[in-house]
Length: 402
Ligand SMILES: C[S@@+](CC[C@H](N)C(=O)[O-])C[C@H]1O[C@@H](n2cnc3c(N)ncnc32)[C@H](O)[C@@H]1O
Ligand SMILES: Nc1c(NC[C@H](O)[C@H](O)[C@H](O)CO)[nH]c(=O)[nH]c1=O
Ligand SMILES: N[C@@H](Cc1ccc(O)cc1)C(=O)O
Ligand code: SF4
Image 1 (cartoon, helix red, strand yellow):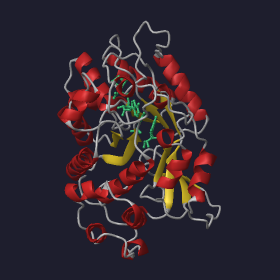
Image 2: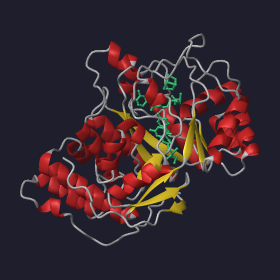
Image 3: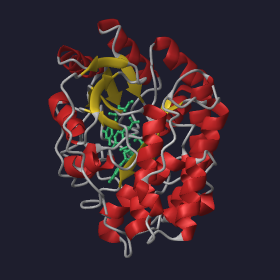
Image 4: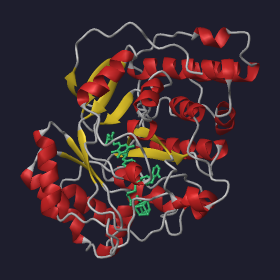
C-alpha cells in the first residue's frame, strides 16, 4: 500500500487546448507541469478551481488526457443496491434532510431480516454489492452492525458488503466499548468488504462547525479511515461541496486525501458529491448558503481532483444521483472514469429534494458511456472487471464543456 501506481498509457500527448493564445500563462504553466508528472500544489489547485473560458477548456482537456494515460478509455459502473436501514438520527447535520426523529411518521427502521431480504433481491437482479448506510439511531446496540454483516454473508457469501461510514463506525465502536481498530477488525472478520468514505463533507474544522452540531471531527474521520486502511479494509473518499465552502477548502480537502493515500493506498476512488439544497435546514434557515455547486464548479471539481490525485487515486467517480444523468455524462470528458452504481434505491438525495430518481439501469449507464465515445465496463467494488460491453463505441465524442 502507499506506492504510486504505474500509468497504463504512458504515451505523451499535449492537448491542443493548451496552445490556444487565449490561455493565460499561469494556467498553461500549471497544466504543462502537471502533464509532465509534477504534483499539483494546493495553491495552484485554488487557481484552477476559478478558471473560465479558454483556461477552463485547457483544464478539462488536461484532466481528460491524464485520465486517458492513467486508466484508458474504459468507463466503469457497478450494480449495487443502497440499503438505508434507518433514517432515525439525532446528530443534527444541517445539510441533511434524511434524518428523522423516532416518532416522525416518516421514521424507518429495517430489521436484519428486511436488510437480508433486500440484499437477496439485489443479488437476484445482478448486484455484486450492497451499499449500506444509515442514521445513528440511539437504540441500535453495538452488535447490530456485525449481526447485519454476518446475516447477509450467511445468505449471500459472494455479495460484497460496502457499508458503514466513519460516523457509523464511531457510533458502533462507542456502543460496543471497543477501539475503532477492534470494532473494524471484527466487522472485517464478519465479512465487511469496504467502507464508504462519506461523513467527510468538508474536512475543515471551521466549516464543519457551521454544517453540523456534533459530526465527527476531521481528525476522527482521518483516524477511522486510516485505521480501516491499516486493517486491509478499502474505503472510498468523498467531498460534499457547494454550500458555505470554497476553492481553498476544496484544495486542502483533496490534498489531505492525497496525503492519506500516500501513507495507506486504501482509497479505491474519489466521489465528489454536490450539495442538494432544496429541502435542507442549512439552505432554508441560513443566509448566504449556496444552492449547491454551479455547473462550472462541478466540472472544475472533477477535473482538478483528477489532476491533484494523479498517480495516487486512479478512479474519479461522477454521482448521477447528485448531478443528473446529463451532467454526469459530461463529467466523462472532464477527468471522470466511473459512473458509480445503479443504486436501485436512493433516500438521501431524494429527502433533500433531489430529482434524479432512485435507479439507473445498467443499459442506461452503458449507453451514457458509449455516447461519450468510451467503452462501458461493469466492475465490482474493487474495480475488477465483471462484464464488458462489446458494441462499437459511437464516434460522436461530445465537444468542449464550457
Ligand atoms: C446521510 S449520511 C448516512 C451515513 C451517516 N449517518 C453519516 O452521516 O456518515 C451519508 C452522506 O450523505 C451525504 N449527504 C447528506 N445530505 C446531503 C445533501 N443534502 N446533499 C448531498 N449529500 C448529502 C453526506 O456526505 C453524508 O455524509
Ligand atoms: N451509493 C451511492 C453512491 N455511490 C456508491 C457507488 O455506487 C458504489 O457503492 C461505490 O462506487 C463502491 O465502489 N453515490 C451517491 O452519490 N449516492 C449513493 O447513494
Ligand atoms: N458514494 C459513496 C456512498 C454514498 C451514499 C449516499 C450518498 O448520499 C452519498 C454517497 C460511496 O460509495 O462511498
Ligand atoms: S448526515 Fe448522517 S449523521 Fe448527519 S444527520 Fe444525516 S444521517 Fe445523521
